[in-house]
Image 1 (spheres, rainbow, N blue to C red):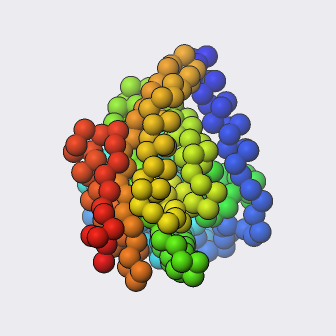
Image 2: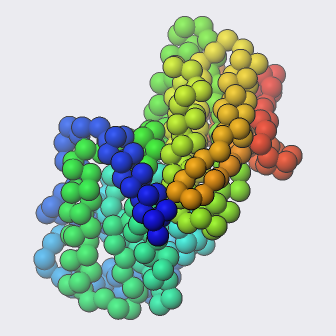
Length: 330
């Protein structure tokens, strides 16, 4: 327990350092806009009907049945709170709230659990979720109260300080405005006669770290890995927590070799580092996919090619960079 307490303390201390002042309030107190992420139509219907029965607050609900659709909704809209099933078809267990938190750090998350998921729900709260609700064991009044308390609790935790564009765990930008950031970088590099290189970096076998040591230890690993990225990337690079254990790096440069060397340096530094976390000594490696953005290439195509290269790196043994040559770029 002492080691675990030390890990929690480290997370809290680092999060306080990473939070920057806000310019405005994140959450509305009169009208709550809820993103419901639930793959069971009956459970989703019960929750939506519960909101319709109450008159304590105005609640509007957008319902999606998987994490992919949830990410699309969060990139297009703003929500006051997310209700997320702990086990979705494309994101199970801790992965559900990790993906949401990486995408929108300002969003309070309430986990929806089944009968036997209490331990996982507690892990979710320890690692960032605001509360949990057991399906079939709530009243309309209690559900609304949980939502109101979760929003207020998040405001208190952040102290109105978390930037909506930042990931509070790592201090990096999050994925929410990545497309806008990419468009800006592409125009800027073209204006100064340079090229834009984009990489996706993914920690190898990170699920094994979470499974063996717990998600809070995994959070510290993510924080320290993010620090390695920042320390070894050029000052002009843009580093984003892409989701979960995946990071994107956008780099301005003159040559493909220069960009590749920068990513290889990051991977080598990660491989050489031993992370002392409480009583644990943990070592990680990472794989990367690197491409050069075409002059008029859109965000989706660039990151699709990055993902393809990352897949090749994983399939070729991990702890390596796979890159698409400049000749292959549109």
